[in-house]
Amino acid sequence: MKPFRDRLSIGRPLIGLWQALANGYASEICARAGYDWLLFDGEHSPNTLQTLLSQLQAVAPFTVDPYSVEPIARVPVGDPVVIKQYLDIGFRTLLIPMMESAEQAEAVVAATRFPPFGVRGVASATSRASGFGADAAYLKTAHEFITLIVQIESRAGLDAIEDIAAVKGVDALFIGPADLAGSLGHLGDPKHADVQSAIAQALKRIAAAGKPSGIFALSPEDARAKMADGVSFISIGTDIGLLANGARSSLASVKG
Image (cartoon, rainbow, N blue to C red; front, side, top):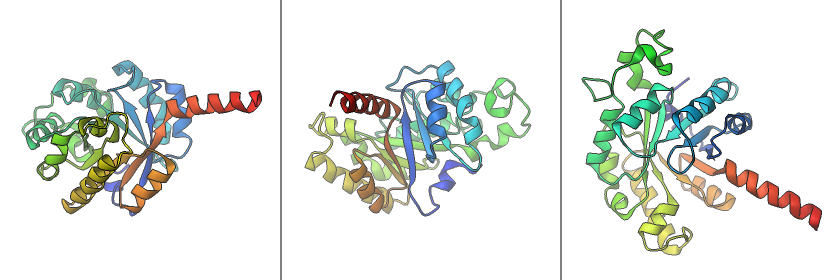
């Protein structure tokens, strides 16, 4: 399976869904639905390494044709220890939250690379990512399959877009509207005109820097608009949202 970064240039937006239920059953159901990617959230969901591992195993059959679902993990923080653990259990694509400088970006890139190109700890014989040692070339080739996405979700991040995008090893930039709204003084209102204007400018700057952009869409209409604007990958909701909205809708349809 190609690295996710290669799939970002196939000529159509890749559509994904946030996974926040921290449950293998739920992730298997979503993987069967036909999404291009699923985001397993380690920042705002009750996930542990064990729950993430079980979800990776649940979606493994769908990571190859005809499904080709890419499991992406959002780490809780861009810490080298956490990044190492997520990579060891088998994630090849990571989303790093709250990126605000080139120096931060350089540090997380280094955390995804084995020496001499980085600082990732070496434990290939016991890692699921290497097939528990079956992949003899893993230490030398692992970085070729890793896709690193950084999340822009603050005023500082906006100010540093060009510097962050220029860092070698940063493969894509993802806009987080909720935190960005809070940082810009509009907490809870990511649809505010100021926030949407900042997002539009950010997407143009990312494109000008030659990097793919991604975003969490606020609605189906927003998703279609952002895809028309050239966004390469887009989340159109969450598993929690699907369950909550479906539960309410079902009840309302009976109660009248």
